[in-house]
Image (spheres, rainbow, N blue to C red):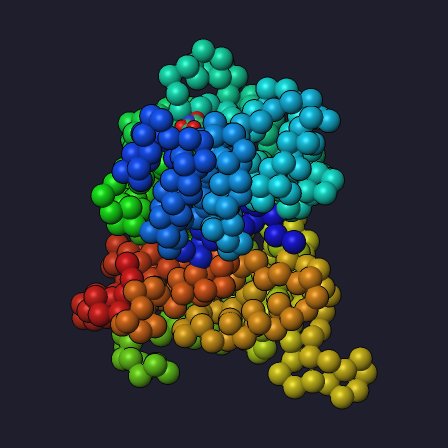
Length: 513
Ligand SMILES: O=c1ccn([C@@H]2O[C@H](COP(=O)(O)O)[C@@H](O)[C@H]2O)c(=O)[nH]1
């Protein structure tokens, strides 16, 4: 079973977007569909359905989730209720549906609201008020909905009136939501949190302080567009350390655009641009961390990273080559494991400083076997994170226990695949399909050493790494990306004559950033 926030995380990585498309059929926006002041509820509901379906059809490639606001359907009585269900069905099962209903009531009533939202309206997640405490929120997260449902609780909303009460308590709400999430997850901090926070894009200071109070939670940040929130300022304040965990919902900013698909694409791109600037500004772009510098230095020392002219399997002439097989001493493998572990712990695969979102590391034969082993050991020694380790044989054993899988059981487990470099992505895709054939096993991410940030073919704008993340719907994290490697070596003057030009030319021809 995949929870609401796991689905959000996966889809966000898959389509490289943080945009959530709001579905708010304001009556005055339905006039072009024939609605007048005398239209009946049924007539308005029919127009609302066509309004929402046309937005969905135009924006599907860019939407991490859809957020229908219950108010605009409930105000139409029973035709509105069935329209909302039809809208959710039109979205289909692939894209999460966040029902914006802002419920909050005593436990037994909240339980009925949970049935209404999840079972009757088929929502994947909801928005809730936290003001009545954990017992008013838990029915959406536990019992029948454990490991499945998820909710954004109101923390610091985007409206002017939010300063009257929420200004004084939003940090407390942010901290409480982290605690409640852990409680609902049975105290298991390795699980993806099941709560997020609504913090308006109209208040960057509150966004910054909420992010600090709840570093591992997703933020839903409405207010960009019709409410005047500043996208860059909001992203700067609200994105997490790796430039993610923030959904930007936009309703009227899209529904009122002449070309809604184009507007959604533009918003997705603007958000990603802001994201890149923020990550770069925080040192996640060309700037690199100590573990990345060490990794590059010892890769050069070991001859793992070489510059020259190399013909790749794809036929391309590359000015550099990375051969992880040359990490061939105990010391180098030790350092390598630590670099992988540090990159995993500073990525989306680590929801908090001491937890990870996977149970087992899988190292695909052959290179992945030693890599997976040293990464599992380094996660334990450096971060106290003790996960399972498994690998496969290329040929099944015909004696002993037989079979191709060795090590920790992966049945019912979340698995991280560890490999060196993704070229075409074939090996990772094979591992993924093998893992998904194991009962209950879900591959949740891939960890690699170097992201070459290179297009597989000139007809697909995505890099091989981005295509794996997009097609498999899981994040791929690397110790370093080419731009960081290149930036560091250039700053340090570690290139020989002609290499900067050759790498620049190669990046211009095949690079994605
Ligand atoms: O703090 C909040 C919480 C929820 N909303 C809802 O989001 C959309 C915003 O619509 P826009 O047209 O993009 O302004 C709407 O459904 C609100 O009810 C919010 O705005 N602020």
